[in-house]
Structure formats: structure tokens, C-alpha cells
Length: 297
Image (cartoon, rainbow, N blue to C red; front, side, top):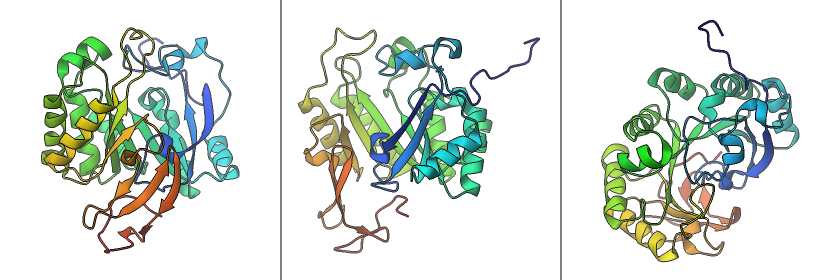
């Protein structure tokens, strides 16, 4: 208004849920706890396969919102026994001020903050955000700029810069790559992505290859074949990544689980979003003492 930006989403979420932290997905951050999850309308991408398009591709006046100021978000999170608040579903950079204020109050009251984002954000606000949140999951849509331009109306490089900044700032980081048939599903692309992660982030950042289901404007494509996902995981592990998972797959598949990269034993057994067994004790493998990266307490 008159050359000044005003946020229309502050304190006005259109989605409020209690979710397992594994649903975000965070696999190395307070396993088997819940996250009080909020989102407002809007996104700075326009992904043709968005699963939350009914809120991400809407303006705040087009969604059913509830009034929930930061203090109330933190209060409800505590009342519901949630160890963290998740800024998720659509794109948290759209409700940055709301997220930032909520995270600060949460920190004062012992509630962690986790961000689920596409990572399309300028450096300065990102660095400020890193001072106040505990974990960030980045949806790395693909490892080709062409995909970003044609499918998401964005660019790849700013997202890679975001990922490097988060790692440099010491914030817990996990990365998800949604594998879309015919668009970003070649072994070459899996290899390039994993190699970039090895070079820039090291072997310990968890990578989740997630299964695509036909959504929004890409209903003509089939779901990702399991074989493609397994190939992606195999390639990333061959490159040297230690914690590679598959998402949106049958709940008993072994790629839901965490294994010790040193002794190979099963550490965290998951059934879908639920933890069945956890053999990480004090941040280490119970069997051989290998340090497992993550936030465990």
C-alpha cells in the first residue's frame, strides 16, 4: 500500500494440525515426537504438481483462516504435548514475520521450531531465520534449472545457495527430492544431486527421495515406479551419502529405516510415519557407538 509491503497472512493460518515429525519428513530430529503444524495461504513457487495447491496457489482472502497469533500457536503446541512447531504445507517464507515471531516465543518457552520450505529466499532474511529456528527441510525440486523454470516458475541456484547457508549456520538440515517420472528421474540427475551434496554438505545430511503421485496440473503422469526410487537411493549411497530414505512408499519398506553406516545394524525402524524401534542412544549407535548426526534430545 503506497509503496509499502504489508503482510496479509500474519496470525491468519488456514491449516492447523498436529503431525508426527516424521511426516515433514524429519528422520534425524526428535524422532517419535509431534509437531504443531501451521500454514497460511500462498507460495513463491507455482509447481505444477503441488499437493497442497488448494492453499499454496490461493490468496489469503480465498481460504478459510483462523485467528491464531504467535503466543497462541506456542500455547496450543505446549497444550498438545508437541516438542516443536512446524511451518509447513504451503511456503513459510510467505508468512516469514509470523513464523519468525512465533519461533522466538517458542524458543523462550522450550518449544523448537522446524521449517519445511522450497528454499527460495534471500540471504539476509535466511540468516536471521537461522538464528531462531532449529531445523529446516528443503524441498529440492530437481537438480536441473530447466525443471525449476518450466515446472516451478523459479530457479535452481538460489535454492542451492540457501542449502549451503543453512549448513554453514549449523542448523539441522534434511533434503527431499520428489522424483517425477520423465521430468527429473534419470540416474545421471540422481548422481549429480548426490555428488553436489557430498562436495558441499558432506555425507551426513539426510536425503529423502519421495514418490510422486499425480496431482494438480500433472495428473497425466503415473506415480513414480518403486524401481526408479530404489535406483535413486542406490546411486546416492554409491556416491557416499550415508542416510538416504524413500518417501510415500509402502510402510514396511527398509528405506523407511535408519541404519548405522559403521556396523550396518538397524537403528530406527519406522512403520510409515511411526517409530517402532529406536536404537540411537545419546546420539550414538547403541551397538558400536558410532555418532549418528541429528538432534536427538
